Image (cartoon, rainbow, N blue to C red; front, side, top):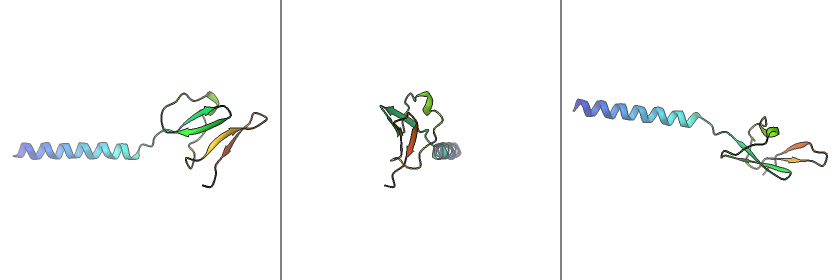
Length: 79
């Protein structure tokens, strides 16, 4: 009986610790670029070197677009 209680307590504590670890660890945002636009994705992709320093977007609808002169602009629609 005591062995079952100890095992159940240990198992519950381990599950709680693992759940709290995954709950506070945010997923790394990746920028997937094609043509003159870079979109945010939640899976692992090979980012171009120029996009490595870009921060996570405030909304999933935000993206980067390359202008006529080659400069990248951050566009974040209100919707």
